[in-house]
Image (cartoon, rainbow, N blue to C red):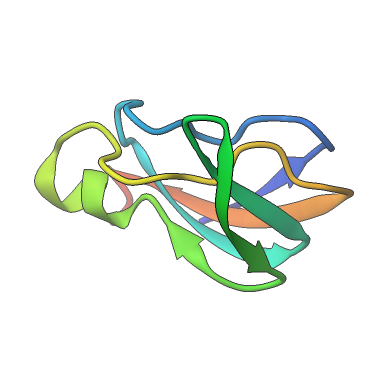
Length: 81
């Protein structure tokens, strides 16, 4: 795994994107937005991207778009091993 430094308003992954990484949130607050509406939030913990990796499909569920402030996450590519 490697560290991914995320800037405010930077998209990490969007719903429907091809899943090529699994993400583990180390710090920061991420809103989960579906069709322009906030439906949840990751607050300094959580993970996403695993379903797309496991099933080799685009990310099927809402994924965190821009974080609210300075954030960090750890990510690992599909080919890690």
